[in-house]
Structure formats: C-alpha cells, structure tokens
Image (cartoon, rainbow, N blue to C red):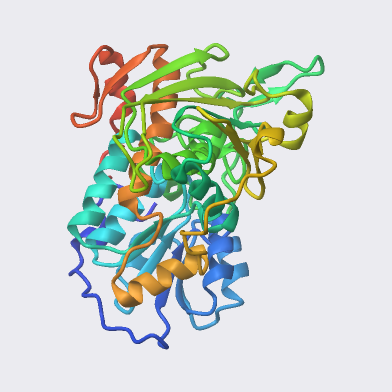
Length: 434
C-alpha cells in the first residue's frame, strides 16, 4: 500500500475554501470507488465536471476513465483529495473505508456524498456527523429512495394523522448477506477462508484493507461478498436498514433509540453476518409534530432473511415481500419503495388524502449539487443520516453481544452492557485515523 502507516494526506493538506459557484456553473467532482454504487453516482453526476477518479482496482479504474479522458486517475484516495481543483467528492467504497475517506474529505474542506451506511461503526457515524457540522459541509448519504415521490406521500399520511398516532412499526427485507443456502433450504454462515490465493495484479489489496487488520486476499471478500463479513460490512441490516428504516425515521421524526433488543437470530458467528435476524428498537415519546399529532414512544421491529411480521396475511406478504408497516390507532399504512396502501382498505374507501405538502425531489444527487451551489442543505444530510446509521448498526451490536442494550445516546454507551463498547467503538490498524 502507498505508505500504509502514514497519516492521511487529505487531513494534512491546506483546507480548500468553498468557492462561489453560479447556478449555471459545473462543479468539479472527484469519485472514490468508481464501480457499483460509485458508477451509479457517476451516471447521476456526469452533467458536472468529473475531474478525478480513484479506485484500488486498476482495471475498473481504466474502464471508467475511458469515458472521462480529462479526469486524473488515482489508486490512492489520499492523492485524489490532494488535487486542488475539487469542489466535492463522492465516497463509494466498501463500508469499512467510509469513515476514513469521508473524514479526510471533510477535513480538506470539500463537500461530500457518501454511500450508505454512512460508516462501519456507531462511533464513526457520530464522529463523521460532528465533523460535517464543524466544517459546515454540504453532505448527502446514498439513500436515493428518499428522493422518490412514494416516500413523500407516505410521510404526509403519517404526519397528518391519517391513521392516528403510531406506536408500532415493522420493517422487513427479504434479501440477505452472510450465508450460503444449503440443499435442505437451511442457511449456513460463511467461514473465514483459509486457502491461499494470489492477489490479482490489478488490485492494491493492502490499500483495499486500509484501516482493517491485515489478512490474506481471497475472492470471498472482493469484489462482491465483502458485506458478508463483519470486518468489512454489516450484512443486510447495515445495508438495507438505511433504506427501509429511512421511511419511519422521516415520517415519525425518530432519532436515537433508548433500547435495542435482539428477538431472534442464528447463532452469532465471529466472522460472518447473520443470514436472518429479528431486532426490536424502542424510541421515546417525541411530543407533538408540526401538525399537532401526538408522537408517542415507538417500537420498531426489523426482520430480514425471509422473516416478516406475523400480522401480514399471505396475500399482503406476496404483494410486499419487502416493506414498512405503520400501525396507528385508526389503521395502518404499508409501503415499499414504490407503492403504499392504507389498511384495512374498506375503512379508507372514502378517505380524502391530505394536500401534498412535501415538495417532490429534483433528484437525490441533484439536491446535493444544488445545495453546494447555494450553500444549503440536502434532505439526507449527515445530521439526519448519522443517527439513522447509528440505529441500524446498533442492531448488529446487540445481536453480536446477545444483550438487550439500554442505550445512552448522549454518552454513546450501553448502560447495562459493557461488552458492547468493543463493537460500538472503531478500532483501526496503526496509521489510520478519522
């Protein structure tokens, strides 16, 4: 790796000053991680100036760079951050690299778009949100579903009282990371590979590992399965939790849970994430919202890997194999990314929807671009998406320690479970920091 033990050069460079940018002027944008979600961001930002590209895989970098011949190319993200003409940077690396790259971007004075989850650990999420506030950065997390019209209409229904005060929410996701399905249909969690494999010549493996303790390269990690491993990702909950729990967070003005409790799951594996899990979060009373609706304490239950709420009928589950169910005093709202219904339907046949009061988005990436130009704020800035990420990651902490966490969000500690501290806090190999 390029000076693995060195301090992050992006932190050492002079801070860039936010330049005045006219409405018709294009931003100079750098991309850290050019494939997968990085490629998605490039597609959505190609109307700006893509002037820097970085990836630890030289083959992927070269393939994308063909479309941007004027862009400078890097394998080491720290060298990209040192490029002086950048206005903003996208971080689209695996989870374990989000915090170190995003912190370096923020300290360099640039605005940043980071993929979800915002970070790999709870402590990193809090630190990154604080840094964004300190440097007055324009930020956005990659929960692009937030920009869809469907979520807006659901939030309007919930906040205006269509189903009354809501005390219970279920969130479920059919996809899974962290296991291999056996011929009998059972899931078997993945064991850490032991057979040696040569590092591909196009991959800087040491730099891909970054802040994680060194381990031999294996194709079970890169390029596709890194989310299966605690060392690099957080499985289904960390990934899809930030998409599906985004809806109740927004609709119910949630922030930090007070209790995080594992209800069921497979035996905890020291290396790989669970193929299925049921987790419950308790949120406190939030007073009344801006429409005068009571916001009582909420119990939010997460299900993944084929688990789902028992209150769903088979027909409803077929229609919504992934989704969110708000259970209110006067009825329920069920939603996925693209559709929603009020339930029971016979009770809402004559229901008149509230006038739309949340403007439709101009586009998730475009929000970020326009906010940078105006020095405004996006809808999924780190002040919002930091607590969302913390909540998702706390579920993994509770599962791994096998403990009902009584959570003190201010102190970032579980009052009743000292063992959680090791997983809440980030630990980097020497030379890496945020």
